[in-house]
Every structure is written in C-alpha cells, then in structure tokens.
Length: 317
Length: 285
Image (cartoon, rainbow over all chains, first blue to last red; front, side, top):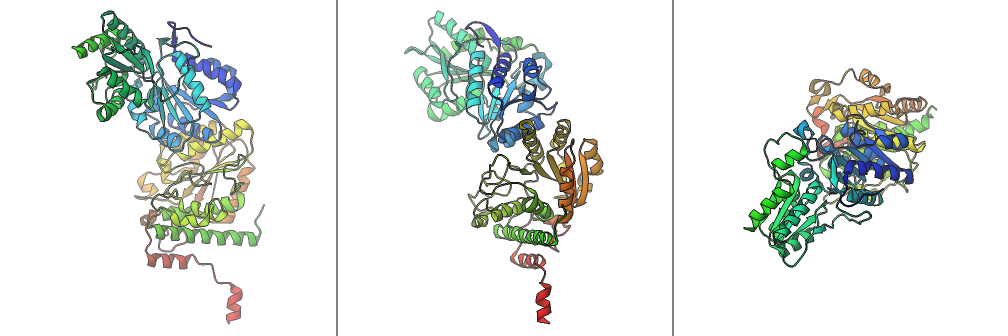
C-alpha cells in the first residue's frame, strides 16, 4: 500500500494498514490497545489478526508495562493509543519499563498535538515531545506524512529499540513519493537548499507541509528559504541544524507543540552552543489553548503557510 | 510432592545462608533494604532452589521460568542467590552498591538472571503479566512468578495489572505478596489499609491462597498446589515477619532500610548461625 504525492492521507490509517501487512508477515508482531482500536482505525486489524491484538482497557500504565513484558519475551511490540494518554498517564512506564529496561516497545501516540481540537486540553498532547526527548534511551519521532510513517514503522520493526512516535488524527498532505527511505537521525530537506537561502525553516509533523508552502510563497517574492523535515527529534540531526544555520544565517522552527522544550527547544540548545544565529520558534504558546478544531487552532496561532510566511518576512526585515 | 526431611533441612540451611549473605552485603555496602530482604528470603529460596526451571549458564534460555521482583528494593538476597547459583561470578557480590557496579540497590537487567529493572513500585506486576501473556500466545509452558510488597499494593498500577491478568486468564502467572505488615512510615494498615486483602484479590478474579511465608515447606506446598489449578491467575499471600531471622530487626519499622554496623552484623550472624549439630553435643558431653 502506498500514497501519491499531493494526495491526503491520515497517518493513523496508514499506521493501521501497515500493521496489518506486517502482522501477516510476522507472527511475533503484537499490537496493544487501551480501548483505542477505534481511534487508531485498527478495526480491520482486530478482525483479521485477533490473536495479535491485546486489549488492555482504559489502563495505559498497565498497557505499557505489559508491552514491555511482551517485548522482553521476544515479541515485536507496537502500542497504539492517543498520544496525550500514552505520554502523560504512562510517562513513568515509558521511562522505566520501556526505556530503562531497553524493552523494544514502539509507543505509537496518535491524535497528538491539538488533533482533538475542541475536546480541550485533557485530550491534547502539546508537551509530549519535550517530555519524551528527555528520557535516556528513547527514540522520538514525529512523522510528517503517510509515506514517511510507513517507512519508519518498517524501520522500527527491523531495528528493535524503545521509541515514541507521535502522529495526528486527520488527513495530511502526502509529501514524499512511495518507497522513499528515511532513517532516524537524518533530517530531510523538502524545499530549497541554494546558495542564496537566507532562512532555514525547521518543521516537524503536520507543520512540514505548511512550512513548505510558505517557502514556495517566499520564493514567489524572490526570497529564498529552505525547509527541513525534522521528523527525528531524537536522535536529532545536529549537523543538519548547524549546517542550515551556517548556510542561511537565520533559523525558524515550527511545531504543533508548546514552545517550551519541543523541536524549538532542541534546536535552540544546539544553536546556542554551536552556531548562535537569530532563532524564532513558532508553536503553541504557554497560555490556555484556543478551543476549536485543529485547523482553526492552527489559524489562530499562525501555524499555517500564511502565518509562517508573515513570521519569515518579519525575521528577514 | 512432599519434601523429604533432608531436602527441607537443606533448604532451611540455604535460607539461613542467604540471610547471612544479605546482612553481610548490607554491612559491606553500608546500605540495604534489609527488613524486606529478610522477610522474602524463604519464598526466594523455595523458588530458586526448588521450583524454578532455569539455567544459570544460559540466563536468557527461552524456556525458562521468569521471576520478577516487583518490590525491587529488596534485591540483596536475589543477587546473592544468583551469584550462589552461578549466574555470575561469586566474587562480584562484593561489588554490591559500589561505584560503577551493575549490582545497584534495585534490580538491574545488566545482572544475569534479573528479568526486569524495577524499583519504582507498582511496575513489576504488569511486566510479569506481559511475560505470562507471551507464554500463552506462544503456547509455551514456562511460568511467570512475581513478588510484590504489601505497601506496594497502594499503587493503582498493581490493580490495573490484576484486572488484566484476570481478564486474560493468565493462569500461568503466580503472584505472591510479601505480607510483612510494615512499610517505611509504619504498619501498612495505619498508612494505607490493604485489608481485606484476600477478598480484594478474589474479587479481582484471582485464585487466592495464604500461607506462613517464612515456612519454606508450606510455601512450596502452596505453590505446587496452585500449579494444578487452571483458569485464573494465582495469588499467594505470604504472611511474613519483616526482618525475619535477626532478633533486633524483626517487626521493626526502622529496619526497612539500614546500614548495619560491625557490632550489629556480629549479632545478626549469631542469630542466623546454623544450629549446633546434636551429634557434636553428644560427643562433647
């Protein structure tokens, strides 16, 4: 299964499809849910591979602990549930049962960020990247499209290690051609990279597409920016961050996450020590989150192509 | 199968030896959760010297029985036993809690024979559930054992795991509670009451039994009987004495964790000495 560039596809659906394919090939694959099979669109998986689905009920701490026990016993384990509950409620289990035990559990947090929109803060995960990247031994990935999601799930299956992966909920523009290879620790340039670039936009997840479109709009105005897909928050591609800062002289980060400690924080840490340049971080500020569906939330906080464009122009003045 | 008198004597002697090892380790390192280490020793000896199917020279042997110490702070007797059985060189036990050593004050998978890093309470049981489930899914006959503390039962994650074990009919899971009645702050029933304990676990769908947890013969008999019962996960409430075997530590809240001075060590070892051989006494008189 694969997508076409320009098409729209929800990453959680691509995840469910990919897991179905993998379950057929790999009898050791096991998926855990916490009353979450609906929200991860695992209905078909549950029907076709019932013996490879473990239901834990609304008990994320138990779910992660059980996942660790299964992984330590040799199973190929993926936990699939909403990101806010996996990253929040079960944080200690991810830190200890998974990462500290080096149990190769892939914690797949869907509907992250403000995907749940008007359901409010209890269902948002705007601090998950900050919290997870501080855990020693845990990989942190935020895929930007369905193609990349499929590739990373395959990569994780072939490279057992503790990992937290966050996706959204809705349909997202496909940026990459089917079969594109991705490797954690290696950022991907999705736009630009010329001698004349005066701004590097580092984006993650659902912000990569609008960042790319903003760069296209800038180009129409004769302004050159490059855009990097920072799907690999940990390990972070520090060389790509430094190189883009040196080449462009200016860096902007864009994320569906609080400003504290996420992609912007990670980039700021690297730049401050290795290549201090003007940095502007776009994201969700530290205030009660605007309550609306996620597209309206993005609009409200300028996390759109137009909003990114406006910030870019302001930086370049 | 009832134990022969000589086998029982051997196990009881081993339990004294393990206790002597635990107090010595604690004194040498000047740190150890010795109270709960002493209360759980008879159960550990029953497992490791009689019931568990494992291979010290192949700690990750796929068909082994698993044991998870969810009350991971009481690690001294477990490390001592693993060294004694040859999971790692005996002399390494001298490194317990020394700088840079893997033999830290909680369970550590870097130590051969340890199945899961624990320490933060309430985690081990769900890990044990995952292991038991793995055996079920693969149709493999190995068993999973898990020891939890009674203070630890206040953690909600224990009850999530209990629900899970029951719902998934993990009758290959054997949970035991080291019911010594004490925790750091004082008696469990004063800090956060756990009674009625057996009823709670029965209500959660467990097959429950209770036994004197410092009676090795009774512990083995209870566990072997539980091996024959199918359909539900198993719980064995081990009624134990915290600090068991060392007169000045028994039932003392203050000995939850201790350093053990040289003088205290001498007294403890005297309490834990093997009884004089009656044959020697006859010769002497």
